[in-house]
Image 1: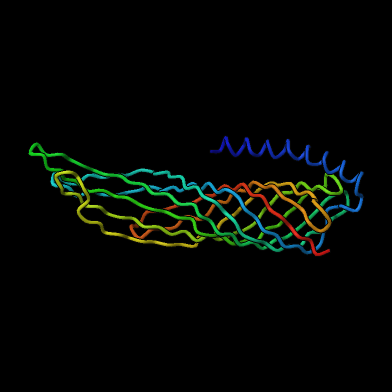
Image 2 (image 1 turned 60 degrees about the vertical axis):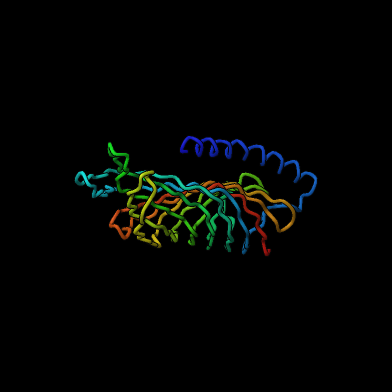
Length: 252
């Protein structure tokens, strides 16, 4: 996935040259269409890839043949869509520099489901074993960002994003008991959990004017959230990668 993100990043960089060229041509035709500054609001939609890591995962399987242990680090991927809105203020600075600040709130649909099973099939044809499965969902995130940038044309801006955010993550860890001739689950003991970890995010993007007071953004960003404990005392960390398209309305 990292390679894909790098590819998207270089695609964004190459696209920025094309966008600035198109913008330059549009300015020749309509010199009043420039990138606005000041207060703005916007909506965004995109794709989310979340990496979920269990650190030093430990689960013991009690079986009729003695205990069995599953341990180590476990990595899962959750994918889905992300969408939301933001408000901000941006100001041009000398030497074509730019500085902005934003508040944002997004809903996320990323989720994953995983399973690990210890099993044993008796000579008499009876299945005996225990297992573990989980579901994890990244629900939403809110935060604040600063956006330093450079104006590459009067209607195109290349910017970075740095900030702090909080996500809502929920899930369920199930201990599953099997004791059926066909190996079907006999009972489950659920252990639901939820957490709202904080994290640091960063990203890169380009913004270009469309028509007067409206602009379009393309952005890639990454967030690393703090580790937290599930009800089974497993340490979990979540990081997200998002590719976003945004439409902005500028008040000035």
